[in-house]
Length: 318
Ligand SMILES: Nc1ncnc2c1ncn2[C@@H]1O[C@H](COP(=O)(O)OP(=O)(O)OP(=O)(O)O)[C@@H](O)[C@H]1O
Ligand SMILES: [Mg+2]
Image (tube, rainbow, N blue to C red; front, side):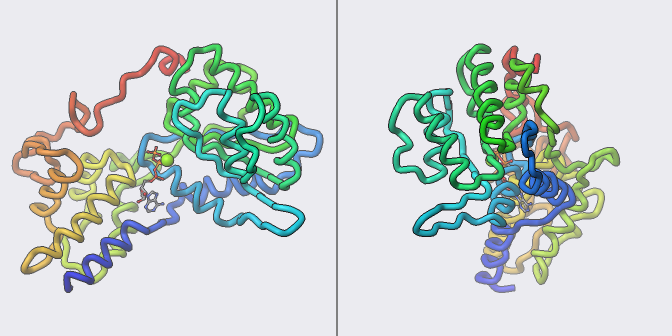
């Protein structure tokens, strides 16, 4: 396969959206929220939670694309409102961020109460049937229990006043909101977890499935059998089962193969990609793609790619 072809394969891996079973299942949950008529009942609140790079934003964006915004002269319809919560977003900033996402030119006019009122009116006027707050963990980036409690309260009230269900998407830290606000927790219909891919038979998402799906995109490229059990185990350790890492390793492997006289994706090439793009300067003992030397332990030690983040007390309690 020629160099331009390998670059094309690399691009297709980067752009791929694979409809894994869990992706379809979460799309199903979201579609139910959009189509449910809540009438006078309390609308549902759903959390979608997963470690970084497990594919949350990707699947949400693809869902929202099914519900395009319609602008006419008299009215704008936004069936599903996707809001990217800005970093360190305090309650003062949230209504403005939502107004901005809706397209209001007056998103920064007025105090928090006035913006909340404008938002409530516009959500109704634009026929919004579902609000998705992506990166909702930014709501608990800073502040204390009290401010997190008030944020939870605001979300719950906005949902009730407008009759619109809300979905909060984020890394597990987002669950702090549930820990501090019992009323919000009480209203949550479901906390959906986006799981990483693993090799243990108990894992809901199997690494062999993920590799099998990406493998199809490598059609025509000379390669080792990526999804056989030994390689799946190597990928599981090298990527912690996260789609961003799996995608990056395979994308860079396709690109790197392009610079070889006889392009082939094999263990030495994957070991080099791992050293360059996942764990800079990893010694062979800590490189899952060097089977003769790798010590078999997960890459969760200090300074390693999957070192657990330090948890705050609230997070532990949540
Ligand atoms: N369903 C999928 N099919 C193929 N590739 C995917 C899929 N989901 C995610 N990816 C790949 O993983 C990358 C990271 O996904 P995404 O940004 O959705 O992760 P995330 O869970 O939102 O991460 P973060 O917590 O850091 O925001 C995507 O850019 C894409 O390359
Ligand atoms: Mg994301």
